Amino acid sequence: MSESIDIEAAGRTVRISNPDKIYFTKRGETKLDLVRYYQAVEEPIMRTIGNRPVLLERYPDGASGKSWFQKRVPASVPDWLQTTKVATPNGTTSDALVAADLAHILWAVNLGCLGFHVWANHAAAGPPDTAAGHTPTPRAVTEVLGDLAIADELRIDLDPSPGIGFADLREAAICTRELFTELGIDSRIKTSGSRGLHIYVALEPRWDGYQVRAASVALARELERRHPDRITAQWWKELRGSRVFIDYNQNAPHKTVFGAWCVRPKVGAQVSTPISWDALDTVVPDELTIATVPARVAEFGDPWADRTPQSIEPLLKMAARDQDSGLMDAPWPPQYPKMPNEPPRVQPSRARTQE
Image: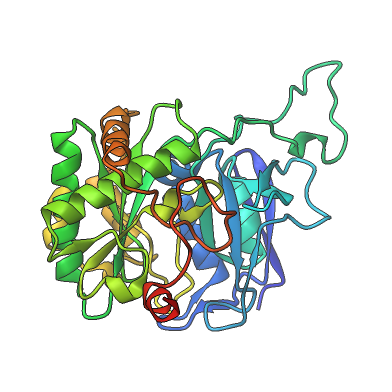
């Protein structure tokens, strides 16, 4: 087994230790195979997650080994590594890695990162000025300042309830796209790399995470009104039935979603792959892996390459209409503080037994 290999990426040298270590047991792909995959999709992945903070899902012994989530970068990192301060719902801050370029992604891969969970916000692009008179000190270049209050993506997670198959998710995705189209909003789709589908909307940088979440709540409720037997906006699982849940809370501030073009920590090395809407009828998500996706990109290109920022004003008007009609806010995740106009955080069946 080779001890290490140097990889050139984005004008930097990234050392990959133990490149022959098996990361994905189904076909025996290695750490170096994962590096080669990210090199092959450098252009589309940087177009989608570039300069965004990322949460690392680390599997140092491969997809079959132990794992943990890491929001903070380690204390000892290269001087060129870029980070930005992110916050948890309770206000705790940490230095998160910024996916500034391919070198940053490969640096994380070398740590055993088999999953990049991406913020809906951009950090400022590039390190501080290093021209004459501005020589950075170690870690000074890592302090990337950006307005992380502004969310410039709306992400819809189509979450399969028990009894829901991929065909049901496909139908729900089409319903979601039809509503977006009716509202004049361009949306794009990707596989989750696991069981679900994700629908993304690139946004004009005008709204914070609270507003984007409000827009997604309005979307979910309107979809439930139009397709009550197929789609639900119910947060509590006991109320969902066999329907596709529109997980609006993926848009809550500080939430991350598994990144486009990123490889899942699964033995088959499945990729969360952007696809065209036309491909939705025939795509088999489990077949989208590090072994197949590069050739697919070479043949069909990046189906998200022409995304343009959209307005969510139509959805915010729907949200205001719902509020004016007396609807309370939808429930927030339990780790968030109680929000204004939020209903009691009590499971409906438990609330009934307490009455």
